[in-house]
Image 1 (cartoon, rainbow, N blue to C red):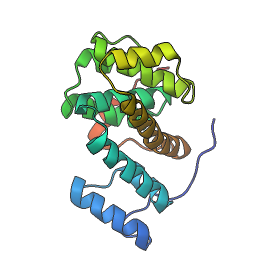
Image 2 (image 1 turned 60 degrees about the horizontal axis):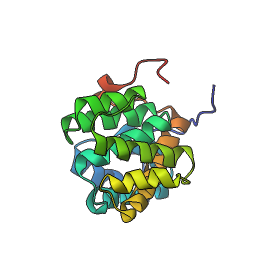
Image 3 (image 1 turned 90 degrees about the vertical axis):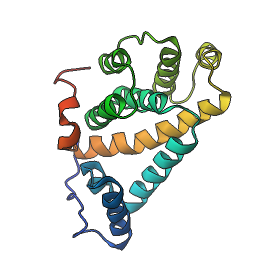
Image 4 (image 1 turned 135 degrees about the horizontal axis):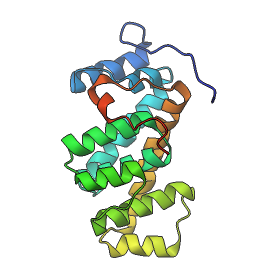
Amino acid sequence: MNAKLTLPLVSEDTADEKALEILSNTRKKMGRIPNMYGEMANAPGALSTYLHGYDWFRKESGFTPAEQEVIFLTISRENACHYCVAAHSMIAEKVSKVPAQAIQAIREGGTIDDPKLRALAEFVKEMVQTQGNPSQGSLQTFTSAGYSQQQALQVVLAIAVKTISNYTNHLFDTPVDAAFASYVLPAGTK
């Protein structure tokens, strides 16, 4: 068993001044405070950095919403983050309209049928597995699929953002929010 933090889940009632502003803004935008945010609020700089990077990626990456979810879901799957795999599976299906086959393939470690999404997911997977040292062939496949070299850097941003959230969830063994609990991978899924 890995080490786990025992810090409390921070709420608007228990937050310090810096965390309170972030949590209050989150509640206004989302109508709730996800468990992950309450845990990250123990280090407000981590939560602020995560939210800023996440927002920047969503608005400026040049990827479609479906491509963004393929990226986030692939990173979270590679990092074995139960919380983020569940959250991004739900967003992929309900919000970003990622093809069901692609979601299932990522979740199960399979192959995506759509060639462009497959090239994207394989590049992201290699970036995570090699700590940012993809092969020339992987980069070529990525750009040949219609993605730019600048978007390769946007993948780095997504990995940075997901590393903050995935590692936080590992440290806390974050309880999955009810909103996406039905998307948790079955126990024993590798």
